[in-house]
Length: 74
Image (cartoon, rainbow, N blue to C red; front, side, top):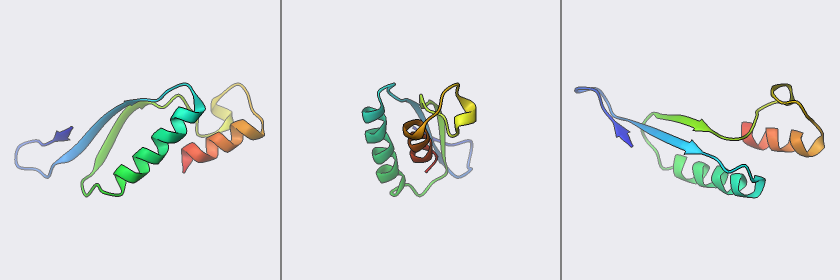
């Protein structure tokens, strides 16, 4: 959704609920990156990505979880 307040420059607002399924989230990351490469305006997300950026944010860990954290952070 494109937002504007008065005569200020427009910006984009996106609301995203990411799937709890890792494979579907990976597709979302790719889609966001591809779409983001075409955006020329500021962009704000309001979301539940169903993912954490670091192991400290969750109550579990391991190599697979760490890999997903790194992918999400990227």
